[in-house]
Length: 297
Length: 235
Image (cartoon, rainbow over all chains, first blue to last red; front, side, top):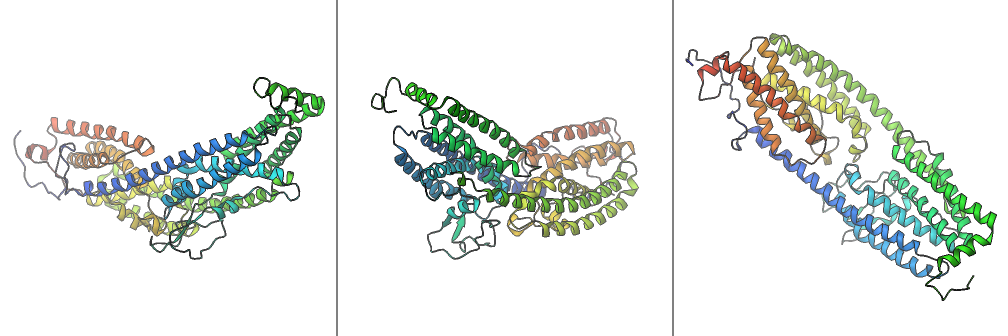
């Protein structure tokens, strides 16, 4: 092709035609994108680390719930199991949630909500279930289930140095607040989001339903009635909530209704068939192995 | 026994979500105002596809809209409690990306380079670091820039239609650099990744335009500079 015209103005545009050739270190776009890349990678890495931590919390919480279900009025193991569960839950708070809190320090906790939410909800389920089982025993003064402020109060951590007072009304306190320099921050917390708490608590009803049915199996009809009553209260509380946007909560309330219905059905059977159902269930349950308890009921 | 369930808990939570709803309502009002301004800017910029001589005028008008948006962002920043940007960010991410696109387009048309995140943040009155307050999220920035790529591929076609054969070459280099830049990113399997995957179609479209122009010898620069890339001036 003939070169006919010259004098095309140049205003210092890009230097290369093919983007894939080699990285041009001086190219402003490349320089800028290297920076964005670092920032993105950092964010993703933190997210992944929190997901891992959260997974550990989920697994341990599930195991604790399983452990708590092994409480059986015939085995008289309640004290021992509760004590172990309490210790393991405390360890979760002191070790695992502390690690998450450290990751979230000076961050926007809502940015990583999806990363820690499953672990937190499972933990809340285990924690409140433990509290429920504890409250069964204390006849005189019944302790309420912890709300998110109570839980928030537990999840306070201190660096090695003595803590300095900070605002602590539980609601909107944020780890990222008012503490620009890392070394100035001696105290930190794991932020318990009320919504996460309420979602986690709604899972407790599933455990209560299981306890209700298991109690029927072990002949503890009082426990059946009690758990059913607690379930009904929870259900009442949850349907009193006015939540338009919260699809997740709505789904959980639907599941909760199923649990309530199952528990109510158990209570109906206890009432109608009286002690027979329980006795039958009790003997059936321990037919082959447990000869120690034979004829206990 | 039934005392275990604390009914106060539910009324407290109801208060909590009521407060949140109210704040969201207020945020939505401001976001709607920003949307309105951005829409106008976008409409003003449509003229570039039909009349090249009006580009700088359109850019000026769009800049005014952006300035007006900065005011609104100040309002938003006051509404959102510190440290809770991501709690409410779903309300404004979409429109912020749109504005980033508009700003990037204006800057490209005026000066021919890619606007940095810092400059966009400055123009919208935002911070770049989340610790400093209401900021410009890096992913939003990147998503906005990807919108720019699509618009430029359209612009390349239309400038040829309007008889400007140099511009597609310029755009092609620019998008090529952008593409290289995006390849530096470690993308997760998320929205940004999906959107980035569409960038290759923009690249392809522009390359086709450049090919058509070159093979027919329509571009004077292409004829003149076989071994060095031609960079036609912008307006």
